[in-house]
Length: 95
Image (cartoon, rainbow, N blue to C red; front, side):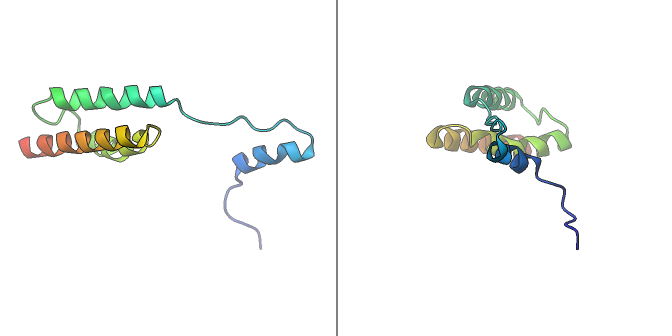
């Protein structure tokens, strides 16, 4: 029976070196870029008196913001998550 899942191309790229190929480049996001995006979103939320984003965008930010903080040092990420959730709760209450 054939495997119905799509092939994991990243895995294949990692294994090319076994056959004399170049190893796949390491993919990683720049912590400074993640930090800048987190602080920009937090500043936008802090500056708003009511929810500055439509519902779908706000939901997306709530989903992605914590993920972006995982690229940062643990204490900084935890503080940013707390600050963002605090602001989101304030904006929800203002609605």
